[in-house]
View (tube, rainbow, N blue to C red):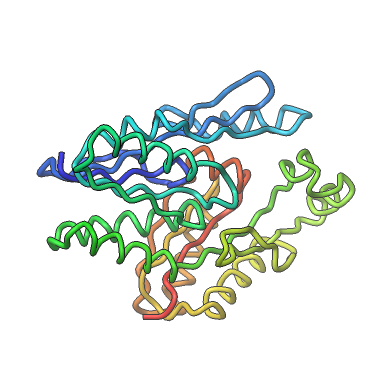
Length: 282
């Protein structure tokens, strides 16, 4: 195998291999724990059942990032490896990947391995993986692809909208009273991913329609001028489809893809939430 694009399971893509067998997209799983149940975030996970377990527990759920050994297994599969992790501000996944890179390079000094901090999650990684695949198909060399991917991640922005605050309440980040009122009033929290890789709530609106309008505003305000965008939804294909249609109406040359959240992004977005990634500028 010549290429392996490795992500942790914060990326809402499943493993695949190119038709010519030269490029593999692989994934190392997080583990989400709800009560005494552990859910491995791989191809077999049913996120809806995981959410049922989370919502049925009074205590907060938690996540465990991939081990260095899990990353190492994937790093040994190809000569050229590009790893992309969830934001290092949200998880220790990048640290694990960097440890694995050191282990792999000690065993195979000639191997080329780059570890990139997405400073994001979900659909931003989806966009970056697809762009890397395009550059490989064009014949770009390893060093050029790493530079391209680094710059690309710097100009992709992320916004999100949440309609469930159960996890925030259980983790103590939102009071029970505020959580109850938000649910009763059908409030949505709209937020962004910062350049540093943190999560910031920028507004609260009532109802899905206003949440969608706020997401569209954030896109334009943060530099979207058409081009690629990607929506990950947590058990809410209707909202994702409506949002994609609105984006295409606002920007004629918009190229929008939709995919369901895998386990980790389902944990963060909660049931009904959406995460949106888009290219800044053209």
